Amino acid sequence: MATWNVNSVRTRLDRVLDFLAREQVDVLAMQETKVSDEAFPRDPFIDAGYRVVSHGFDQWNGVAVVSRIGAVDIVRGFLGQPTWGDPPVVEARALGLTCGGVRVWSLYVPNGRTLDDPHYRYKLAWLAALRTAAAGWLADEPTAQVALVGDWNVAPLDTDVWDRAVFAGRTHVSAAERAALAAFVDAGYTETTRVHVPAEHTYTFWDYQQLRFARDEGMRIDLAYASPTLAERVTGVRIVREERKGAGPSDHVPVVLDVDG
Image 1 (cartoon, rainbow, N blue to C red):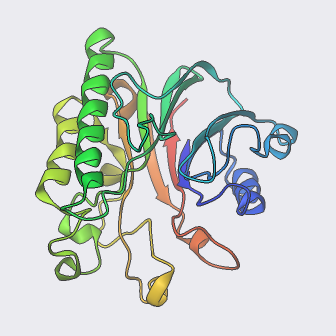
Image 2: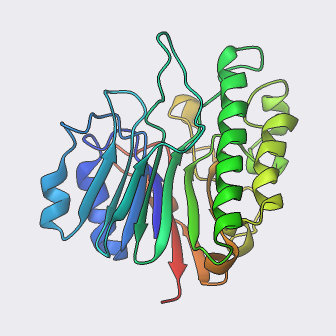
């Protein structure tokens, strides 16, 4: 299982297909697909043996899951998901489906912009609503196998950014955002990338500007929270740094979870 903010699935199509083949990924959750459902490039994935489920309205946001082990019980958005915009809409930021017995959620958490921006309050409300929903899923079925994966737009620890001083007074590292993530752990979920890749300054995102990748000035914001039953099955995690290299990369790299069959 893998998660990847592809930053436009049409732009990165060849890279994504190559990654799937090379890594032999059974399920890939994508974020920031930037395409409507009608325009999603399904055929190449289908030709490669994957079922495609997408949730997108236009060139903004968008999430998708491709799976070669089934895709059932599809839900676009979660109960209580906050709205944004004028007129207010439920953005295409959450997609849930069951693949091979695992309930996979592809999540693209709002950015927040700045600490005094309404989008920051929206971000915190979005995370709180997701936490309430996720806690409810485990309350209803404690042995459920649930994977909450994607671009969380929060760096949980100071060592998840290249220089904490640069982020002082900014989003992604605020106490409220970090508390919102900690609430998922309190609800019973394990952030599996931290368990299996505990090394400090191990990043999943590097901005395109100011030679951030060349300087290794990154952030760790692509995370994978697993329910207790699923967390026990995760045997390893790989952050595929190589995908940030070469021509036309996304600014994020894939995170791969090895799950014991």
